[in-house]
Amino acid sequence: MSTPSHTPKPPGATAVLALADGTLFWGRGVGALGEVVGEVCFNTAMTGYQEVMTDPSYAGQIVTFCFPHIGNVGTNAEDIESTVPAARGCVLRADITEPANWRATGALNGWLAARGLVGISGVDTRQLTRRIRDLGAPSGVIAHAADGVFDIPALVAKAQGWPGLEGMDLAAEVTCTQTYAWDETLWSLDGGYGRLSDPRFHVVAIDYGAKRNILRNLASLGCKVTVVPAQTTLDEVMAHQPDGIFLSNGPGDPAATGTYAVPVIKQLIETGKPLFGICLGHQMLALALGATTYKMATGHRGANHPVKDHTTGKVEITSMNHGFAVDRASLPAGVTETHTSLFDNVLEGLAVDGKPVFSVQYHPEASPGPEDSHYLFKRFVDLMDARRV
View (spheres, rainbow, N blue to C red):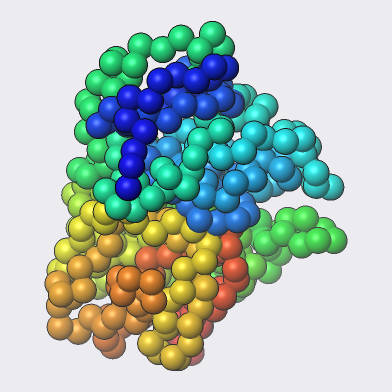
């Protein structure tokens, strides 16, 4: 496959994506002026760009959207997963158009600019995605300047100097700074977000980069949720007298975050409380059980990933965002693989034999994405319910 290395600047270009190997992608700047550096990845979802850009699991990453029309439904204050976007920037194929949706309160370009997010449009995202698929996710810099003047050698050097996600504890950057309560339920067409009025269970959610819709799914099933920072101790968790513990999604290398999280997770397993982990929480649960993780070449990011649930035999279409995975060969005795990717056979879920402990690699709240995996929240609630009898 040919690459546009050292491609001359075309007329009218106000932005460039410079990769660590010197490959250049020229385009038109969107969002904020300036430069951002990070790992360049791609997402195949056709909807939910606001949720993607505000998903804390994208910390340290520049998101290439495979779907060409990003921004056409505008932005609003409801479709966000965190107050401060964690993604560093975005790469788009087509120019951002005027919003065409009844829920829109603003345009994507202004939304990006207001949050300091740098983007580039007019890029051949198919070519960039194929490059990532074939060669792995590179480090890169997006630069956006109104005058279109860039120091290309300096940008390439900046990309080369970025250390990459392996070994990074990014959960520390996106976790909450203090404990808080959550009781907001899922959005409905006729009433927007609701409130939990009569909780049946109390869940402590350890925030490694939790998405709001995950918390809403728990609240919608009758769970009062207490969200605690990533470095919360066992005693601090148990002081809340939870019925169950939730290990959230999050960014970065699970082995790096695991230096302080894994010892606590090991202790939580021994309490006998139901424990449910997703994404980074799944990976660190695996580490706590004695397994290992590894960095994937391209990762899984999108809303169309088929996964088989071995407990039911059913296939679900899932929403994913992960660049690390659990090594199946490292699973110890007593830990069973429960879910498998039908794209590339990567391990996507596990359970501890004889204990109320399970996890999945993907995002079952489906934000964005299909709702095939909502049953997992019910599975967690059922475990808590069974221990009340």
